[in-house]
Amino acid sequence: MNSLSAPRYAVIGAGMAGLACADALAGGGARVCVVDKGRRLGGRLATRARDGRSFDHGAQFASAEGPAFADALARFEAAGTAAVWPALGGGPGPRYVGVPGMADLVAPLADGLDVRLATEVAAIDGAAGAWTLRLKDGAALGPFDAVLVTAPAPQAAALLEPVAADLAAQAVRAVYAPCAAAMVAAPGPADAPAFLRPEAGPIGWACRSETRPGRPRPAGVQQWLIHATPEWSAEHLDDDKADLVAPLQAALEALLGAPLGPPVYSAGHKWRYSLVTEALGLPCLFEPERGLGAAGDWCLDGRVEAAFESGRALAAAVAVWGTLRG
Image (cartoon, rainbow, N blue to C red):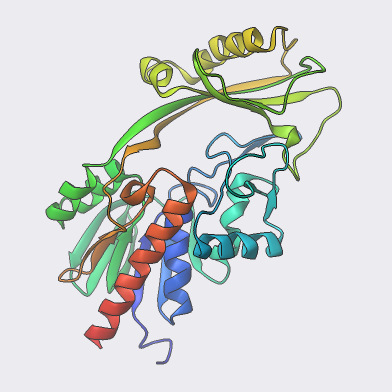
C-alpha cells in the first residue's frame, strides 16, 4: 500500500489514549492526523514550568499491571522520557514519571506523527469515509476515513452526539470526580517528606516535585503540588483558581506541623474531569458503519495504563475495519 492509498484517520486528543491509538495506526501504515486544543502533548499528563520551577499538576505517575504497558514504559525509559520515582515506592511494580515533566512521558508515541496542537475542534462534519473536522478558528481538516475521539467522556459525547448519538449516549455514562490543585514553591520545613497521602481532611495527595527524577531543584525551595480530595474539589469547583491555594496550603502546613514560609510562587488549577469513578467497562467504542469511535481511561479504569490500553484497543478495531473495507 502506498502512502496516498493508505487510509487517513483523525484522532482528537493528544493524551495517552490518543497517542497510543495514533502510534499503533501509523505503525500499521495508516496516515494519522492528531489534533488537540492544548499547547502541549499529554492531556492530564500535565506539567507547569515557571521560572526554573516545575509542577506535575495532573496525573502523578504511571505503573504497569500488564505486559503491553510495561513494554511501553520500557520504551519511554529507553528514549529518556520516563524514569522510576524511587521515593514513591510501594505497589506491585515501579512507579514511573515523565522526564523532564509528566507531559513528556508520551513524547515517543508522537514521533513521526502529524500532530496539530493548539487546534480546537468545534464539530465533526460529513459522512462515512469523508469526515471533516470543523475547527474553532473557522478552518477545516480532512477528509478522513474515520474520526476517533479520545477527549474526556463529556467532551467526546458533545462532539459525537450530532453524528453518532448512540456513541454519545454510551460515553456520557462515564462518571468523573473533579480535582482542585495548588502549586506552591516555598522554603518549607527541612524534614518534609517527599509525598503525603492523608487519610482525612481536604488533601488527597501532596508531593514535593523536586524529589522526582529530572526536575529542577532550586536551592532552599520546596515545590509542593497539592491535590484536594474529590469531595473538597466538588465543593470548591466554582471558586477562582487563585482562591484554592490558601486553604490547601494551610491544610498542608497542618499536616507538616510547620509553615512553608513565604511562597516565591503559587497557583491554583481545576481539573473538572479528573478521576474516573465509574468507567464503561468496555475497551473502547467504535461504530464501523460510520467510521467513528472513542477511547480513553473512562472506558476501562481511571489509570494511565487504562488510557493506553483503550487507545490500543480502538486502533485494533479500526485496523480490522480498514482491512475489511479493502
